[in-house]
Image (cartoon, rainbow over all chains, first blue to last red; front, side, top):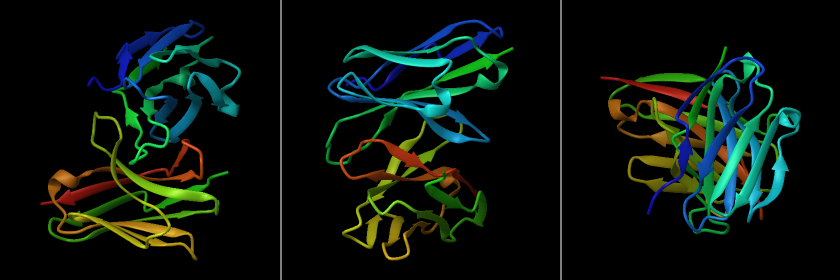
Length: 115
Length: 112
């Protein structure tokens, strides 16, 4: 089975641009998470979906960050407009609700650089 | 509010020693405590986890010790190897909730 896939792997944007990051969860998983990872802030939760319903939309990120889950196998994270402080690795993870190990499987991430 | 606190921020031990990484939490509704590790250039991956019904969980050289009364848990890596060098994140999850709250991470370096 394929793991979590994310595209693109790298993205370079100018300040003020709109960028869209994509994620495909593990087939059959019904929980999907978007995280931002930086050396200073660590792993920060941006959004959490359960069966396509938005369960949590990280408070501090609401104004310019919008995650959507168009179907059970595809999610996007839009950042609009981008700012240099958004430079980070964006990770998507999925899990199976109530799974025995309750493990979140992470994708390879998208490294975003905003100039 | 930082719900899961992790220490130390970085740790260096010699090969063969036991590395000890510590975490504490505040929310008494947390009922599942995983540890993830992340190697350079890779994504986090689950290493080992424990539920509060136990105070110890072992998996090979990795052991979680859990103290529910003090709301603390730790990861012990016995006979540490250079290949264990990575960043380790403790985490916690509430009952009926799949959302994980991560600690800030400990960067572990094992010197040969």
